Figure 1 (cartoon, chains in turn purple, green):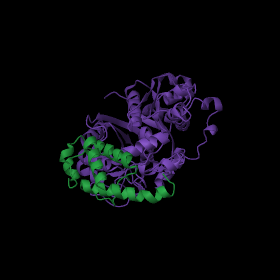
Figure 2 (cartoon, one colour):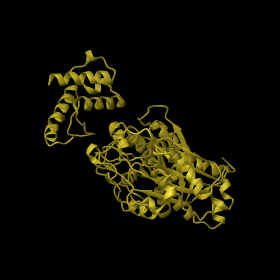
Figure 3 (cartoon, one colour):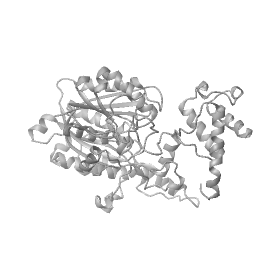
Figure 4 (spheres, one colour):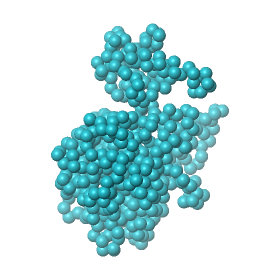
Length: 407
Length: 89
């Protein structure tokens, strides 16, 4: 893709279990301090898995007035909170005309799950339920609602839509927005991912799939038992690197490349080939040699299958250099935020490049012979990192990988 | 006991689309080549049938044969009794 623009990240926002903004989130990650704990939003008596990574100390009324709040499912609330942080940091004003050339793309796996569950409870609940539905059910639950609210919040009138690919949703959203700015189809983008589905119904459904760990999320560790559900949102502001420099903006990192593949295999089992191919494409798109990558923010869900397969995929892509990579899964601290995962993890990867610190894989206990790379166990590591990858490999074999370069 | 074993083998055959006549207590699970999604369905059906919760990745269960599965379910049923007596789910 010659003649294209380089793309800078000039704003980041995030709300997730370890912290409700980037500084507190990143400080927690560097300390290996997780946000996983007993589920607060769902009664425990009917749950077998009773831990999750929930957003805490979040009072929506502090962020939105009553009229606005009526329109916002929890996943849209998270999106706007993160987007406000990111846009404020970027210093961009979209209402000055730039909004016409700006994209707003938010990924989510489930959309307004809290709204859906409330509606079903009302409809099918006790005493025969109610035949009446809350009027704003539809505009709250639609999975593009978060994208729409971002456009309205900032006056963005360019391309806007939701992207949904289960646990790769955010990386697909970020990747598509990145390509828009890179190719000149947009001058800037407000993009990321959001998920808020720690509900009774969702917890029971994940339990039934038997991929949730009862104790902790221990990616790549011997004795790991599965993933831990998380929630939250993260949003990035992307713009042309030359324009960011010209206006004197602080550039957090360069978003350099994007690669995506589909396994065309199994609806739940991951594929080494599909994951490896997506990493190769992201490197190629970013003009990066494998040896330039110092850090990989892994998909690293903590399931037996994902972590072993991802390890093999990393070796396939990086060859001998795989042993020199720092690979960590920050899901050990913010949980698996599903459709928000790629965005939340972009914050970790971008801050790793900016600060020269690889965040750890928390809760790591002992080596697993099937996972024999350097997973930065339990303690963050200072290291100059020139470039990084951030992996998302979704159920259904939809793989999306971002490549970042330090500036 | 024998009734539980029969029910479990019925469930395994039904959910994994296997020939029930070829299942016996000493049948090895790995020989059945049960796919992960079928396994999830089997566990769900066992939980429904016996009103138990099958814990996830519990290393104290050695599951190599169908007989091990039957023993595991018997253990879960036995462990459930005191909880039921205490009025819990």
